[in-house]
Length: 301
Image (cartoon, rainbow, N blue to C red; front, side, top):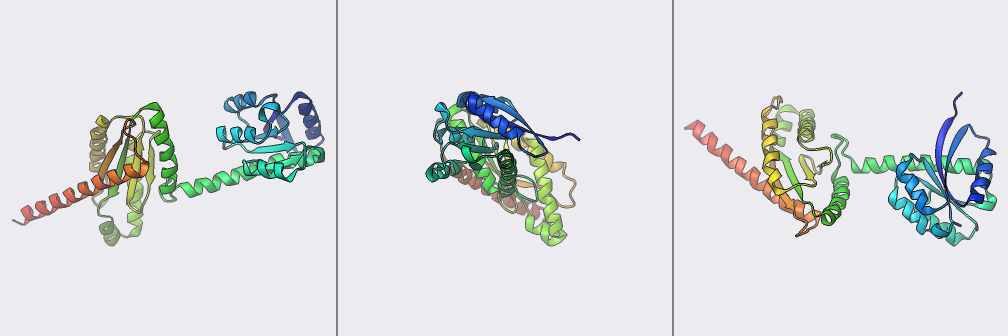
């Protein structure tokens, strides 16, 4: 029978590495722990960036990671990798600080047994998996699989900072699915859901994988296009109109769209950008309604 393998990054000095390895070898558990050792925090961060690691075991006695600043650096650079902290003292203040800074568990070195250490590492991995699942659930729209408003705001705020540093512009498109009430009233709410999903597929076919697409309301979508210029906007709108024509739904599927440009030379918040794009979207919707009314009058005449 092949044992399950767990990749552990051990950040400590050489003597501690030998002691911890011996302790894990004594564990009576059907798991194979593959140890990657680093004698310094800087080297450990490099290993994390280049190697698939399941869990980090950080010993706080290291000179360049002493205190919880080393733990903070690990969590900031690799938030998806759980960290178990081992300390030399049972001081409650030290242990509390380590937990507050993101440690999944804190072990006192003198009290650790092989089984206890193995369980701590495995439980840290499982807890991190649960946390990631909950985070994903809170950021993703269930019907479409797109980001929801919270997910969009989290990622978009990050990209605003990136744009400021890189001096590269962004476009924010705000789209509203037209005639949603008509679809629900005449074809049923299941058809309404299908229209939402069909819109999602259209947006995914138009925009790049690096762009952030989100459903932020019942029939409202936003897309943040990164690393682009204002001249790109008409091309996107042209593609969208072509996709609308190709729709095979039993009802007209169309979007009212507005957009706003993020200029890193004249920065604004993501909320301000949303307000601008939303304003232009409603202007587009109003124009389409007026055109439809004029068309109806002409048909009657």
